[in-house]
Each structure stands twice: as structure tokens, then as C-alpha cells.
Image (tube, rainbow, N blue to C red; front, side, top):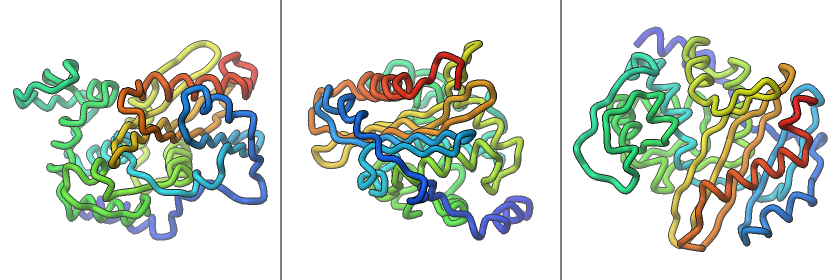
Length: 268
């Protein structure tokens, strides 16, 4: 516990805001990718090497929404730091409850659970962390509005909220080891976020999908790296279409925008 509090103490001045008004370029040409699917949304892209910040729909980028499964990044960090998750190969046995996603209905390692976005696994992680300790870390990192309702649903039930701008700042700090966790903890989480690794680029991210009333809220947050130059991005959309294929839609919008911005060719 003393070690954990030691890390907390260095985090007093952390802020997750990524957007500085003087270096932001509004990119209206990205609107077509949202219109294609009849969704509202925002996309933020920060090239670290160029110091260039591009945003579509800046006003929405400042609004807070439930983080849904993007919170698995934070949950993983706290779980590993506190020892609740011993390592990314730690198995939590399936509880026997049949759920709509068959890939969740089995024993899973943390790495597998992250990749398939298994809600039950990370609900159990949150229960093992406990409300008091989770609140300490939320307050330390200044993660969104820092609100907890039930310990195993607060990132899904619209209690906890975070803005796209704050999400971008969060993953940028994670990449550069600037969060109040040990470097080995942060590297472990960066490793499980890596989804595509090719000779031309590396793409790390976490998706999210939550429902608030009639609204489906979709997320992707992460970074793309070419020639050791990272660029950080966040996508947030909403739709009232009950049949929306959220993962397919968000992935298509994200990849189309990054392609238009010149990525995936190994030239950035």
C-alpha cells in the first residue's frame, strides 16, 4: 500500500487536457466520414513530432461521455499496479453465465480479455480493486469527472464521464510514462493495447461502446507510430440507430481519417 501511495503522491498536478487552443487546426474535410454513417462525432489527431493538432468538431471534443470499454485501459493500469492483476497472463475463470458474445464465455487471461473487450473480466478486476482504492487512483490521475457509482458498473452506467480531449491526454501520458504508475505497469498496458504491428506502422488502441438512453456512444482511443514518431488519436461518435454495427463503423471512420492524414504507408 505504501508503494501505491508513493505513486499517487507524484500525481498531484496531473491534468489530462490535451488541447491547447493556439495550435489546433479544425479539419472540416473529415466530416464526410461521419456523414457516411449518419452519426455525430469528433476526431482528434496529434502528431507529436510535428506538434500538429487537427480536430473535427472541437466543441464535442470538450464534452464528457461515459468511457465504456476505453476504461479498460485505466482499470488495467490500476489492476497491475496494485497486484490485483499479477501479470497480463493472469486467468480469471468464467463464471458460467452465458452472455451474448461467445468469446466471453470461457476462462480468459487479462491479455485475451482486453483484446475481446470482455466486460465480466474487468468487472471482477474492479471488484477486487475496491471502491476506495479505485477512487484514489481516479482522483490522482484526474480521470474525467472521477465519479463512481457501483464499483463494477460505474464506467458503463454514465456515472463516470470523460471528454475526448481528456482521453487523448490520458493515452499520450501513458505512452510517455507520465502517469502515476510504475514504468513496468505502463509498458504492460501499452503492450496489450498493440493491435497491429507491421514493418510500416504500429497501431495501438482500445474501442468502447456504451448506451445512454437511446444514444449509442462509440469510442476508439490510441496511437499510430511510424518511424518511431507517434501520433495520438481519439474518435467519439453517437447514433440513435439501434442496429448500428458500432465496432465496424468506428474502425472504418478511424482508418479512413488516418489514411487521409497520410498514415499506414510508413512515411510519417
